[in-house]
Image (cartoon, rainbow, N blue to C red; front, side, top):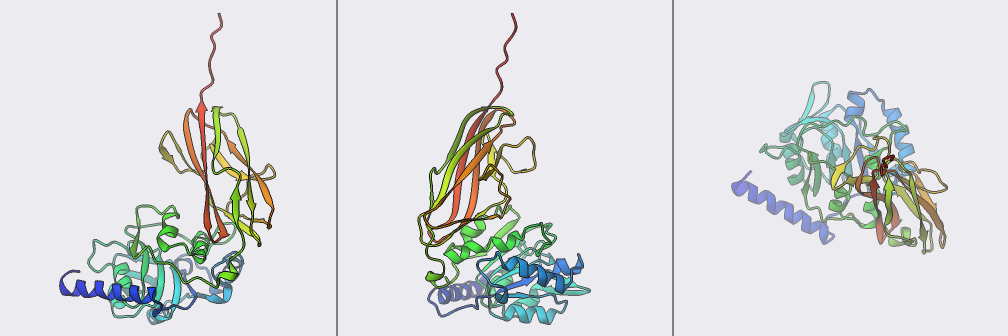
Length: 354
């Protein structure tokens, strides 16, 4: 899009961005969930999805269950009408292409439909294939951004593979939990940066925008501290296990909540390795009481208390290891707590018999 029409679209976006920043444009504190793939491909019923959302909402700190709207329609008008209702966030999993979404049967929502509608969602995450393929002049995410009041869209530029947006336990509803830090004033760009998004996922709009914060008294109080900001295991022989202890505590006046991220992120001699299933392990997840803490476990630390954590390191080859243990917290000043991990793997020294 270029010329006068392109200039007008940019002006319109800047105007609504300014209106949001000065408080004249607001959104209902609601989350819209449209798991179309769950319904149309996997055959999950609305009753089952509602039950799963009931469970998810117990751990979702940013929205309560009565603030979550579930959409399972195959009707284009219903979908567009729901997008036109005021929502702070929308999570949408639909089969798509650069210029359309398939919502079931023979029903498609096209870029033209979005162009002629008025979306009213502050932040939209599209898990559809190719909706963010910006090389197409009429790409779907683009019209979603520039029409109505939407200010930030995350979308994929190529085909992707996401099965259930609202998964069945024990699978974790990652996309929901990654919203939690936004209630502490984290910008959308910072939230997206920390999601391990691949090159196929692009952000459209202003990444510096933040959600309107709830009343500060509701989230004020905890204050995290760490006995060591990094953990160095030193030199360890290959296949030998080394451990290190440190403490995480709470100097605040209300409970500190730590939520473990998924896999430890690590490199060996500067090369990224992301497969957490490889054995033998490298840096294992931090735990306490001599156990590994499963991902997404909420660890509660009461005011003026601390917990002992144990880091484990077993190098599988020689070289320098760099890792990162990551937590979400409910401390407004430290929404993400990162613990760098370092160590060096050494091959055993072989001695020759005389």
